[in-house]
Length: 240
Image (cartoon, rainbow, N blue to C red; front, side, top):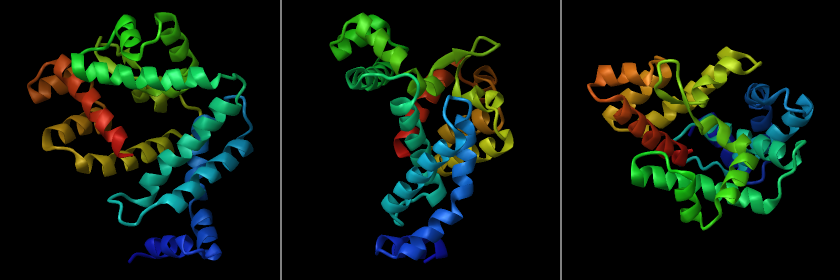
């Protein structure tokens, strides 16, 4: 058993010193993630404290039998805690019902994309969720903070990409550290992919190829790359 696993086991058994050691040893990870959320109307110290709460939840919930590193498991836990804080306690207040509709719309859109092989229309999402088109629009706008990094946009060459591809270029924090965190998580997740899927993700996210370039290299169409990428990202997100 590794030293980290031993500490986690002790922490789960109620050893406060082990828990404190785990927290202290991972505060740098919290600082790196907090940099991504600066300049959003909240003090950096408040975001850091919230991030530490996410870290503590990760420590308490992590199972050493998981086939992932602790840091890989902790990153989305810390990010999620900070996002919830910004969403629930930020400058813009959103009612619980609208938030719930937002998640309903999000999952319905994902299901429809898989089923139809294309982005769903507002009318199709409304029918799937049994909401009105107006309610779908309101829910989508209200949950834009959650949705934004997965929102499809168009690259300079006309190919469809995700906004998450552009995050590192616009964040005010340490870009190299952000990229390191992203790659750390991706390296763990791609181990669960099939050979062709792994190649696509490596080309897109490690070699910064456009969908058109990936299509040419893999001998498939850009549309196929787009559909495969969506499918793979959805499965990778489910593994986090």
